[in-house]
View 1: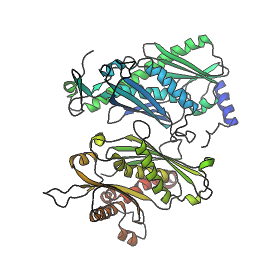
View 2 (view 1 turned 90 degrees about the horizontal axis):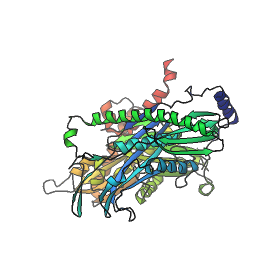
View 3 (view 1 turned 45 degrees about the vertical axis):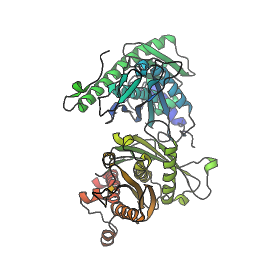
View 4 (view 1 turned 30 degrees about the vertical axis):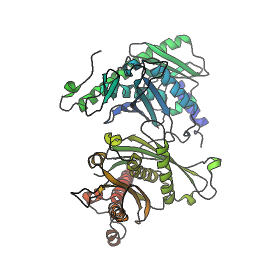
Length: 292
Length: 256
């Protein structure tokens, strides 16, 4: 398997020199995201995110299983990230790279452990039946910013997904298919989104949403996950450069602003999709969702 | 309905293609010729690696089985001896399946196979891997004879809704043909007689391969076909996709 092509010395110097003069190669401002595109498929729970040239597809699927014996009242939620040679020939099937491990850890911390999804609502019969939800993250094209893009994709897909309705009569549960009853959306408690800051010049200068080349020359990265209410879910720092604690506070304010923009964008796209699906205006009557 | 395809839309892979047909959407990427791992290296020919990745979950024996079939078929059309001691890496990601796929009650690995083959070929063309010939692939379903209809009509590349409605299906056949009308792959399932198989084979050949008469008259370049015919014939369709792509790429040249 070939290694990832390393950036040449000249190119590295060029990017760093340009950054000293506050210029990015693609002409963006230092704290600007690349153009974001979000599309949904015909089926529920598939989100296709394009962040510049990075492309990530997240797909949510669910099945009925027995809950874990130590957590009888909770459903199961898993996020699976596996890189394929499609994104880059350096990725090998069945042998995770460091980037892949970091991505799955961050998503785990950001989405699963921050309780973005109410797993209790996935329980059907305590101790015997529950929904097992899985989010598959497919990296289709890799040009940096995988963590941000994957987080957006998973959160958008979760909000787009509809699970089949269940009818519980005592100990007996019937799963009603899509044909029988309109599926219901998941209960999402909040929407965490990740913003990655890349540090250069020994922690003196930072960039938002670095692309592949910038990622290769950066010294450190700080990943901040928060929701649009400004509640920080996790902060992770990788790489050697020292980052001033006060600078982190500054990062937080920038992250909040970015997260607000992103949530608004996702919400807008979701509404557009609902309108597209709701052709005859009958969706409200079909809905089987219970008010919480 | 003719499939939709777009070529070379991914930036990192050497060649890529997206193929949409009957609710199946598959993204294919090819990297090659690239450096091969020492243990897979072959002194006189290229190694081919096929990865099929399902839409949900990780690969199961079903995907491994599909990979084996794809590997042996593609090996016969890639000129592996022209690029020895290299690797051609083919990744096929299933993006979406038709909704009824799980419920149609037929083997889903066979219904997926022709789509995977067509995607792989488009991606190989996009990556400019030396090929001996092109291939086209097709699924045919034979319904069970009923008292009303003794001689059931075979369904060419059925949609999953069609499969669901025409229960029970007696047999499913997947054929792949090269450009010179040679059979490259034949996978069948169910109960059928040899005569039935042969009928399906002839039907598939008709749809997959171009009319030979036209080739002889047109001097090998039978390009002037109308849109309707091109959509019915898979080879014409395939050539059309590549021709349109080449035309777009050559705009700079033809504009001056």
